[in-house]
Length: 257
Image (cartoon, rainbow, N blue to C red):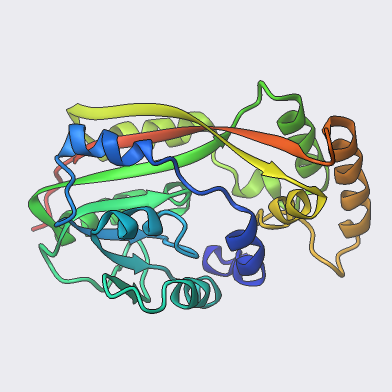
């Protein structure tokens, strides 16, 4: 399936059920990169605006660069009236932003979808000389029995799961090559969501590989998912645990000649 279209039918699930990002990211970027409200930011693979909103609330101008029309529309509706937000139809390899136009490139839950060498060249083109980049993931915490049960259901019923999943080592190697040696940092924070059954179901359906209504595996997957929810719920709620990984630094230089 075309990467751009993977989330077309999941935009509402994604916006309603995916986690936001810790406020501590802003403090970290202030210390590490000198972040301030005057920064111009390109949010690449911005989706429904979950990461960009953190920086909009801080006062930055944010360009939300998203190739998927349905995801982009959700962000445009949610952020309507925010004068410091601009929605852009573009992708990591072709953002449609001007040269030397942004101070910080960010991406939340998106780096693993990029064509890494082409994205690096594009980011260097749009960044100002002192510009930096931040790639961030809310990584599901496998020390949680609930998270392990959730992932078991996804592995059992997810469509083409292995085909779309990079290994952790592949992503780690790509990140090391993406940044300038000696100027690359990784910072982590605990994070969590609290779900009732409807929210937990939505979190599952927001995943690009989860079966959707009409798929043969949809009902069996929901039966297994509800069993996982029931086994771990207290007062009809579960705590879904993450570790937020923040990757920051100056990008590796390439010959753009």
